[in-house]
Length: 465
Image 1 (cartoon, rainbow, N blue to C red):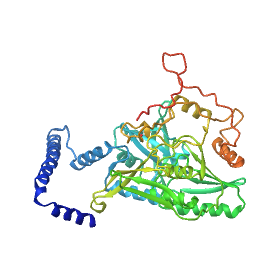
Image 2 (image 1 turned 90 degrees about the horizontal axis):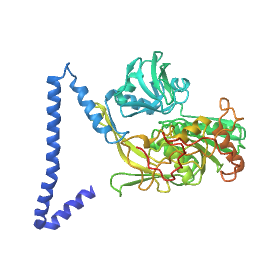
Image 3 (image 1 turned 135 degrees about the vertical axis):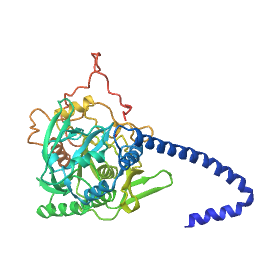
Image 4 (image 1 turned 45 degrees about the horizontal axis):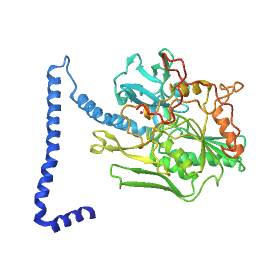
């Protein structure tokens, strides 16, 4: 209210001398509006032509919804239009209960791509992986469909069988049969790993902070003398910002967690931790990988920047933007999911497109180490053509040989090498003090027609989420 009042007073003091300037400004602002109205007229003409001349009758509502969604998805990979049904589905998902397969997906050049399967869901049990492409549902192609329409085909009544056709790097397309379930995502679970606690957070929904606190209290009661905590955020696709702040707050005794900045550089909102650390200062190691995205990156970035934890694994996904869900007519006309801000870690860094680099880089398997070396594994925000730009002067690390990978005598079928190394870091007190493993034998990918192996560019230029 004060802002509008000050503008009015200023205009009155400037008086009649400013009227010519105001008129010029009005004329200048009217010119872009005229162009906008002309383009809206063009849209009406196109719609009318399609209605009259397309080979079959069309559904105007679907056409207009598709046009709105296309307008928004052209801005960046995370903006879009949710029709009323999709808006209801999204609210069910953030509440932590819905019917489906348990896959977090996005769209890349008209193809549905898996960000991450959710823990203990049909998708996870069937072996669907981050980076897989879903090309068909029940034999019907989903190529070219919006994410909203593709998800609509995958969701349905629990107990029904759904067949997904999967395209994966270095394999022929194959079908996976899954049975829909009521997905009741318990986003936080915990157990003891010897002298250490292990807290797994698979997503950030409305219940995550409470579930994480309760899960930690349960294992703390079982072993009051635990020596450290491993926080597993691998393949966590993110979720609600307030829950990322809440989880970070559990382990920080005050100070900044994250800030977000909108179009106006002066529009900065900061989120701070309250006094009190539920672990009472226990050392923490956070596990991350390329499927660690969005809200999960906020937690990892906050704990790393505040020197509260060290990170083990692979560079995270790199989604450094915030989306606001804006209901239209109270949700009766659906909602817009619109990117409204970037977020920054406590050090003031944006991780958009670049991701968070772990303190100790560890590949889970030898195949994963080789995939990092030949860049086949680099499914990230940077792989999207229309992703928001990275922070000026920054780029995602390119193909390189990971620092560590499982040795020959480590059974990756029964063991978790990244978890084992996290325990080592806790045991020795820091990454710096932890004895290093032999360098893996992964080789950088060779350029076709060139025999020599290219050298790693320490400042690679990223491809585009």
